[in-house]
Length: 82
Image (tube, rainbow, N blue to C red; front, side, top):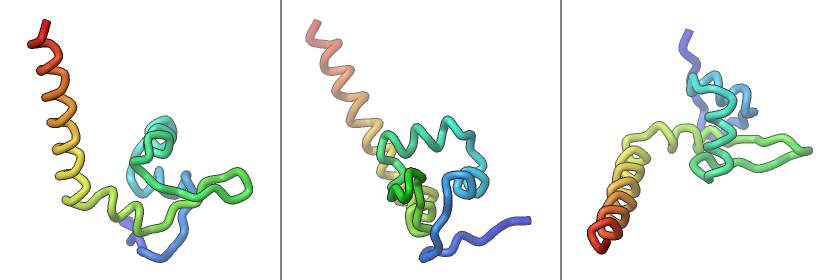
């Protein structure tokens, strides 16, 4: 059964992991790299539904592709200088 992500609800990392169908290590990496914004409450992360929705939106994908292409260009430029 699909669960609706409510923008103003608060989710744990475990709940978010299940909603996004990703591994524990992936969610930790996303939090560490700032791809998924969260607040720490009592030593545990809490994630706002809006953040999960932002992550899976087409806008986020466009941003990721743009970021990737920028990094790729920098690497290619550096290699070409050699």
